[in-house]
Image 1 (cartoon, rainbow, N blue to C red):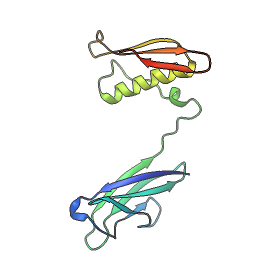
Image 2: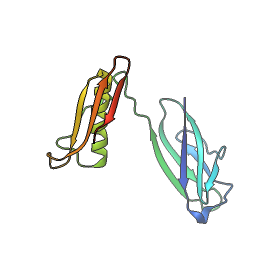
Image 3: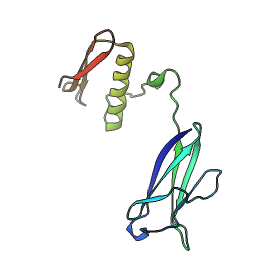
Image 4: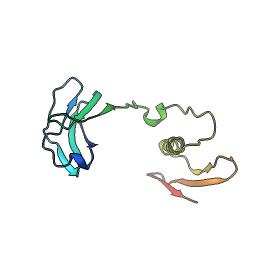
Length: 148
């Protein structure tokens, strides 16, 4: 089991409702634990099974309810952790997400193996260094510092 906070924004026109509820796939509607965190924004802390995968459907309740839904799925990495995710970029990372995944995988692999040296990240022109990270291994722990 794990807990996760989910929120929905029905807008300020739906502020102060005591009827906002949710339904999880295969379950029944509930208003238990739903709180208003800001005008028209509601939250609930859900306790879900580790293997839960399904849909969370919010509604405002009452006559003529409004609905919102969100898919919930857990990504399991398995014993290999991030190393189990293949690097599938066909070229230089372009989007923020591609850069984040690329840097995370590079760092995690270096950290796992406790390698030392410098990791240089180049921009789209493949010539301009965007960042550099130095990595040193003192035996007990690895220190990673941003050089640029």
